[in-house]
Every structure is written in C-alpha cells, then in structure tokens.
Amino acid sequence: MRRIAIVLLILLVAGSAQAQLQVTAPGVKWDSAYRFDKFNAFRMEFFAKGNELMRTLDYRTCYQSDGTSFMVKLLARNKGNGMETIIDQKNQVAIQIMGSGGDSEPFFNAGGYKMPAPEDLKKLEILPTDEVRQILGFDCKKYTYTYKKIFGEVWITDQVNLSNDVGIFRAAKMAALHNTLSIGGFVVEMTSEDAKGGKTVMKTLQLNQNQRIEVDLKGVKMNTAINKVNYFTF
Image 1 (cartoon, rainbow, N blue to C red):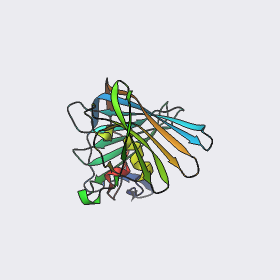
Image 2: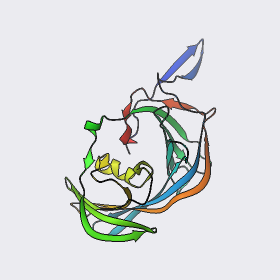
Image 3: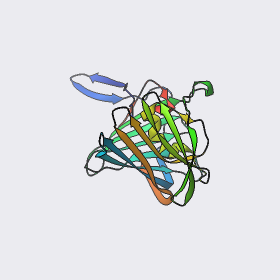
Image 4: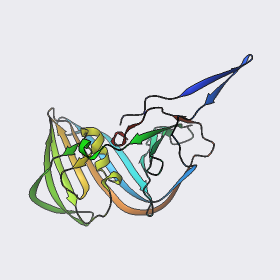
C-alpha cells in the first residue's frame, strides 16, 4: 500500500530553546475516538514460483453496523509491526497508525482523500465461468480475469450485503491498481498470478463477527499530510 508522503512540521525557536510544533494541514480533521462493532477476517498468502509459500498476512476490517467509517488492521506477528488504517467517511480523511503492537510507540499520520469521478474509476473486467461452490456457507460463482500480465480468478457471492471496501477485494485494489469490478457482488476469495509464477491467494475467514473495538486518538502526536490522495490508494 502506498503511504502519504508529505508531512507538515514547523520548528518554533524561542530564545536558546527549540521545540517542535505540530500543525494540522488545512482541511485535515478527525474524531477523537472511533468505535466499531463488527469485523471481517482475511488471510493473504504469497507464493513464489513452484508454489512455495513465502509469507502470510492476516487482516481484519472493523466497521460500524450503523455507520460508514471502517478500519483495516494488519495483525502484528511481531512487536511493533502492526498497522491500522481508519477510513473516516464523514471527514474524508484516512488515519494511519504504524508500528502498533506490543509496547512499541506507534507513529500517527492523517491525510485527506478524494473520491475519483465515476468516469475515472478503474474497472477490472471479469468473465463468468460455470463453476460454483460454497464458501463459508455462501453460494459463490467463479470468474476469471486478465490484467496486463496478471491473471487469476475471483469467487463472488450475491448473498452478502456488504461493501467490498470491507472485504478482501480491498487488498486486490492496491495490487492490481483497479478500483471496482465489472460485475456486482461480494468478493469472498481471489487469486492473482503473474507471468513469472508468483501468486497471491486472498481468502475470507470470517464475516459479520461481533466485537466492540475503540481507537482512542485523544492526545496522540498526529502528523498530517498536505496533499490529498485517491481514496483507493489506502
């Protein structure tokens, strides 16, 4: 995932003492706390040529049953390597918490985003097949796709009433630089493979799980970004 690159800092010099003053970039605002009551769980597996498993990442998307904001959370396997990104739909800002987990002190960054115009959306064209199967108890249909030198398959169900923004397809948006699909429905599984044999398998493990989660941002040292970026880069 690409990160916001520009951070606004101002140094204030008073006499012989120097202190760092944090200034909020214009238009960048966020809530003091975010609360979520639902989560979905996912796993991404990265394979080298020859189907050798190289890395596994576990994610959760935490969201609100009565709201629109959500959080993408990379579960930390080691102290200090967790990452959380809150997408605040009300303020149109993304808050990134990097280096979370254990007793480490995380780094906070907030930056505005903009939604692309409908005509600027990058759409992945997928083709239906005759294959169907059940995944997590949902009837799913298989689609295939080719994107430049990347090809793969997508399993989609119309029995899940959730946005793909809180699904595994959000990760695929970053990898293949596309924003949406040519077919509606919720993506439950997706595979991407490149011309050299590298493969990424993305699976949904749990959906619509109940859990109360609160992220308290009161008093944190929040860095802010001057530039707005495309919504789909988060």
